[in-house]
Amino acid sequence: MDLKTYWEGLDSAERRKLAKRAKTNMAYLSQLVHQHRRPSPEMAKTLCEATGNAVPLSKLRPDIWAAV
Image 1 (cartoon, rainbow, N blue to C red):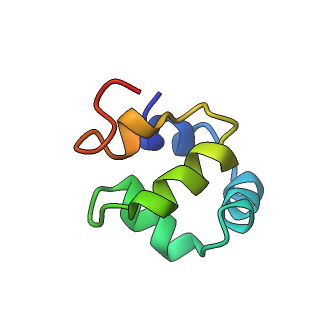
Image 2: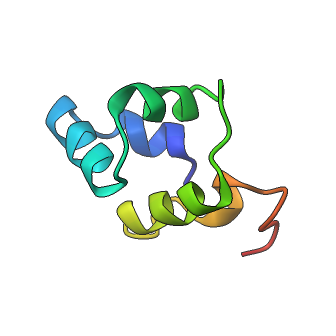
């Protein structure tokens, strides 16, 4: 699943919880969701973990983890 699909399945409270688990803020996550920014490799790993691996590294940074 990609980050946008995952994000769209969350209500606002769940989105805030995701931001907290990822140790970031809603504005930055929104930029990632809408592909205005690309997560750093470290943030990609953090987001993968924060989503319970629902959003794999290969979806967050295919340039680094193409087949993970």
